[in-house]
Amino acid sequence: MIPLIYAPEVAEAQRAGQPLVALESTIITHGMPYPQNLETAQAVEAAVRKAGAVPATCAVLRGFLHIGLTEAHLERLAKARNVAKLSRADMAAVIAQKGSGSLTVAATMIAARLAGIEVHATGGIGGVHRGAETTFDISADLRELSETPVTVVAAGAKAILDLPKTLEVLETLGVPVIAFGQDAFPAFWSRDSGLKAPLRMDSPQQIAAAHRTRRAMGLPGGQLVANPIPAAHEIPRDEIEMAVTSALEDAADRGLTGKEVTPFLLSRVYDLTGGRSLEANIELVLNNARLGAQIAQHIGTPQR
Image (tube, rainbow, N blue to C red; front, side):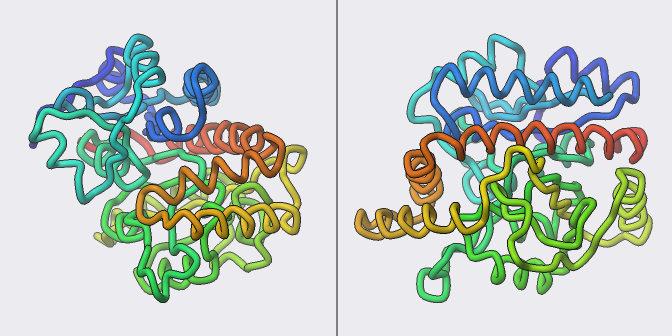
């Protein structure tokens, strides 16, 4: 196993058997500008602590995989420019070359597995991009969910994606998709995508029990917990769909592909909603952090 660098708070939690929640770092480097990105990262970590767990924001810094970041590391990452956005395909190569990068959902799941952390809270997962029938643009997050035994708490998949196809791929890969507290699959900024979630659970205890049962059965992969954004902060589905459609047209005009697409779309949706999409994004991440901490408490001692 490669060496891992643990933040002091995370190392102490590991020794004490406290519940841990892995957090991604692309929200810091690619999600919003400084200092809002730093303030949001700090708020998400605080939400995990307040809900009874210990946060472990993960990133690759100068060739080392960090499990948890100090305040100095958080600030340095928040101010950094042109940071690599790492997923399964390039994570090992960047570590081998002593590089640095923020971690996507897939990469954070890998980091969590290496550290024995069984819950990851994020904003929204990647998925099948619109037009994937010709571009074949499908996020590595989906296959990672089928292979790596981490429960991921998200507000569904990002609404810029093709949500019906995303659910179909998750089903094909055997990934449990659990809507929390409702029957509908949420659509990131909106509580209801118009699609029914395959599974519903109404308590963190039920979700944790499902995680433990998969582990006991020796089933590979994790599970996706689709946690709807709080009603007070959602943007209605029809309104957000208009903004997404316009943003997709702009991306096509620019010829954007691959990892360039999602940051551009999120930025355009921000502009088209007058900043409301970012406010909603922050609230849903905080909401997911709280639920992730509650699930982690019921899963039990971190696996090493």
